[in-house]
Amino acid sequence: MRKIFPLYVPINATKEEIEELLPCEIGILGGTGNYDPAIFSVAKEIKVYTPYGPPSDNIIVGLVKGRKVAFLARHGRHHTIPPHEINYRANIWALKSLGVQRIISPAACGSLQPEKIKPGEFVIVNQIFDRTFGQRKDTFFEGGVVGHVEFADPFCPELRKIIIDCARELDYKIHEEGTYVCINGPRFSTRAESLFYKNQGFSVVGMTAYPECVLAKEAEICFATIAMPTDVDVYGIRPVTAEQVAKSMRENIERVRKLLYRVVEAIPKERNCSCSKVLDFALY
Image 1 (cartoon, rainbow, N blue to C red):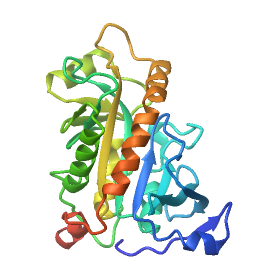
Image 2 (image 1 turned 60 degrees about the vertical axis):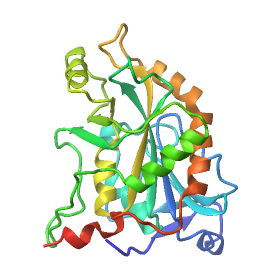
Image 3 (image 1 turned 90 degrees about the vertical axis):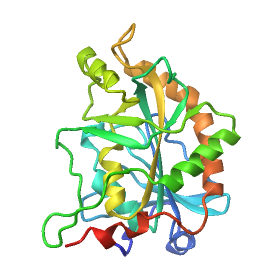
Image 4 (image 1 turned 60 degrees about the horizontal axis):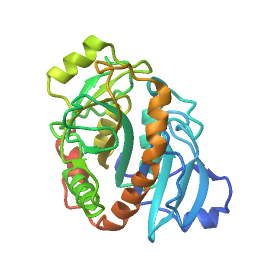
């Protein structure tokens, strides 16, 4: 999967205009409430085809501070795809085919430690705990070549540090590490489940970071999640509602946009992490 040639159809541009914007360096997966790629100075839309079917939506390719960026709304731009039905493999494959080497993934979540992590703060998670119960396709290896990727550290340390440094420069309240519990969804957790996660010391709970992170790892793409707590999970005073999550995300959009704008500019051209060499030690 180290070299994939893109198969796409331009939507609002000529093929020549699209080719000037490829290959993309950086991918952004827009999450709940974050569908407006307003950080682009130049933006064109393409429909990308993959061996795994269509990605969640057409992809926006364009320029952000002179860098070539691809933007994909993981739930579809009108939020029509629930988390358990997202075609994660198609999404990651599509971004890889466009040349993406780094993916930044803002994602709504619930705080499991409200005494420390408040709604509106950002958590730059460094660990994940999978509770999707094997319901999602989470590998590109399905026979033939067998790969076993190392996954002790699911998120790219270099990309995480860049995000942390940029958030500090913006004077944002952030948490530099934490564990993201990924549930299958689309339902929220029961009180018993939330209390279990809280008592384990986990930081946030969400529905999309897995298998995005492991598929990116297999594709040798640097991946980092910006977890954005929109609520205190259900064990708190009142249950979580979709309306509450959407309202909190709307309030966070401009802050996320400013952070992404700064991060894209700060990302170095060359990678100094081990993400690009994962398959060197994974194939048998």
